[in-house]
Amino acid sequence: MILKSLKYCRDKGDKNEWRIEGNTVNGESEEWLTLNRINLIVGRNASGKTKTLNVIRQIADLLAGDVKPSDLIHDTSAYELLFQDGPDETTFFLDFRNGKVIQETLRINGTEKLNRAKGKLFYEEIGRELAFKTDDESLALSRRNSEQHPFFESLYVWGKNLTHYEFGGELGKSVFLKDINRVKKETRVDLKNGNDVIRILLKGKYLFGDAFAKDVVDDMGKIGYPIRRVDVEPLKHLPINFGLNVQETELDEGTDQMEISQGMFRALSLLIQLNYSLLADIASCILIDDIGEGLDYERSKGLIDLIIEKVKGSSVQVIMTTNDQFVMDKISLEYWSVIQRVRNKSVFYNYTNAKQTFDDFAFTGLNNFDFFATDFFARGFEDYVKDVR
Image: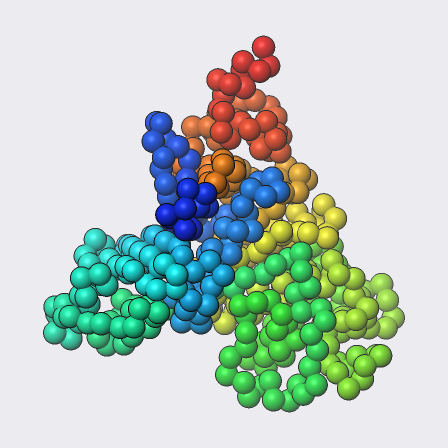
C-alpha cells in the first residue's frame, strides 16, 4: 500500500495556518499533494521540505497508535489521505483540535466504514454498521480488530512500518551497545528513527546470514566506498562498548564506528537499514530528509540511484528531499516534486499535476537545476520565452 495523495492543514481557524497542497490547475487549487512510488522533493530552504516529511511521519505515528493528538506540538490539525493498495483505494480523514478528535472517517472504494461524528462503525461479521463511542483523545482506529474491522489493519501496518531517516543527522553514530548477545532474541528492532543501526546489522546477519552483510558491502562499493566487510566489534577506545567496524579495501586494519567519517557512516547506516527493510519485507514508506547531505556529488548521486534501483522492484514507497544543485541536475524529473512556499502554503508541482510544464521543459535545452532555479515549474514555457526575448 502506498500513500497516493495528501492534504494537510494546521490550525484551520488561524489565518496564518500552514497548509500542504498541490499545484493550481486551470485557476483552481488542486489541493491534493500527489505522490508516486519514488519521489524526490526539491525546494529552497524554508519552503517546507522537512515539514512535509514530519507531517507524514506524524500521521504514521498516529495511525500506529504510537502517539495521541494531545502528544503533538501542533495539537490542532486536519489530515486527508488517499492510499492505493492494488485496485483498492482507502480514504482517511482526521480532524483534531487542542488534542481532541473532532472527526475521523474511513472509506474503502467510496464505501464508508467509519464516521466518528455520526458514531457509526462497520462490523464485518454482521455486515452492517453499529453505533460506537471512544474517548476523544484516541483514534477510533485504536479499536482495530482484524476480524471485525480488517479495514483498519492496513492503515495500522503502514503507520507502524514507516521509516524516517534524517540524513543530515547522526543516524546512530554516537549510539553503542553493551550486550550484543540479546539482540538475536529480540523480536523487533526499531527502524523508525534511524539510530538502531548496530542492532539492525546484528539482526540482519542472524536472520539472513552472510548474504545480508555482503549486500551492504556491495552497495557501499557501488557508491564509492570500497569495503571488504562490515561487522560489530568492541570499540578500540571504549572496549566495553560494541559498534560498527568496516574493513576498507585500501587499509590493513578495520575502522570502527568512532573513526568512520560522518559522511561514510551516514551512507553505511542508511544502507544497512534499507537492506534490512527490503529483505524483511516490512517497510511501507521510507522518508529520507536531506539525502546525500555531507557526501560529495558522485556519492550523493550514486546513493540516490542505488535507492531508486532497489525500491523499483519492491512494494516500498520512498520520499526523499534535497536542495543540492548537483543532485538535481542528474536525477530524472519524473521523480521530482518541486515545492514552492506561497505565503502560508507549501505548494507542490510534479509530473502528475503539471505534466505539460514538465514535458515542455525538455525543449529548452537547459539542465534540470534550471527547471527549479528559473521557476519554470511554476511559470511554464510561455513566461520562459518572454524572459529569453
